[in-house]
Amino acid sequence: MDQEQGRRWLSTALDEARAGLAEGGVPIGAALYGPDGALLGRGHNRRVQDGDPSAHAETAAFRAAGRQRSYRGTTMVTTLSPCWYCSGLVRQFGISRVVVGEARTFHGGHDWLAEHGVEVLVLDDPECAALMRGFIAEHPALWNEDIGEEPEA
Amino acid sequence: MDQEQGRRWLSTALDEARAGLAEGGVPIGAALYGPDGALLGRGHNRRVQDGDPSAHAETAAFRAAGRQRSYRGTTMVTTLSPCWYCSGLVRQFGISRVVVGEARTFHGGHDWLAEHGVEVLVLDDPECAALMRGFIAEHPALWNEDIGEEPEA
Image (cartoon, rainbow over all chains, first blue to last red; front, side):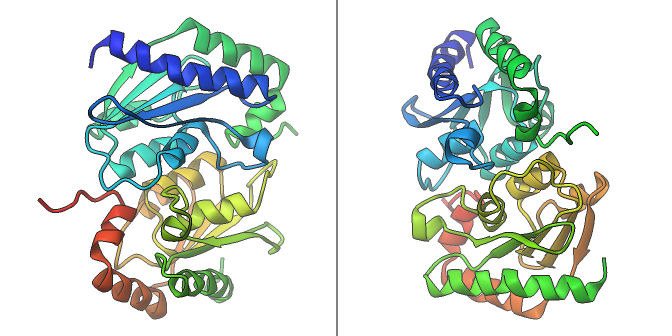
């Protein structure tokens, strides 16, 4: 896929990430696009807002899209490299492409996805990275909780 | 962990699977147990009931447990070998052990989890397998949807 379309779609995920930050949550957003470019679902991390540890951004967007008979040709766009949980989601459901805003502040499973046939585009977007850097600096314990990092002894 | 404890905990997941079947849903159940043996959360697949494709049993149990600062020493018990999505959940959050009711009707990511340091116990339980065999025979399209298998052409 071309970078320009990836960046256009990333703006939806970024809007979600900003909304999450404004709500006091983890600023990660995602959107699922259909093969024809229609927006199927969008969402952001809701750990803080809903007390729901499963509400990672990609899962929130996937849930918002409702039941789909096939994910062939769909694209998951996310502001941050997907963790193992959300990478597993992409692989299990056969989502064809993943657009990653940035993979500097967290390196998830996008290489594993590429090895297993998913088309991966990493955009290295500075705003996505800035959102995460600011959040991690302010709320390190919350961030570690969100990715299952053990608390320091 | 010993098989007897695994079987005791599996009965909670099996109760969930039966409840899901009674509701007309996919009969897979799960439960998350703490290091001290306390039940942290339980749930079952809710694709049909809630129209929520992310509500796999393990995710439902994880969500029901709410926010936890650490998953060290916890055990995810599930009636069926966890798919990539739910295997990713276990790996990302550092859940220490997985008890699998059966892996005959679906072989998910439990070998991958074992390779990555998760303690895995597969019980090969006949009732878990019978529930899935009956469900798959009656609702093959729904089952394929639940695991992201493409519809037949």
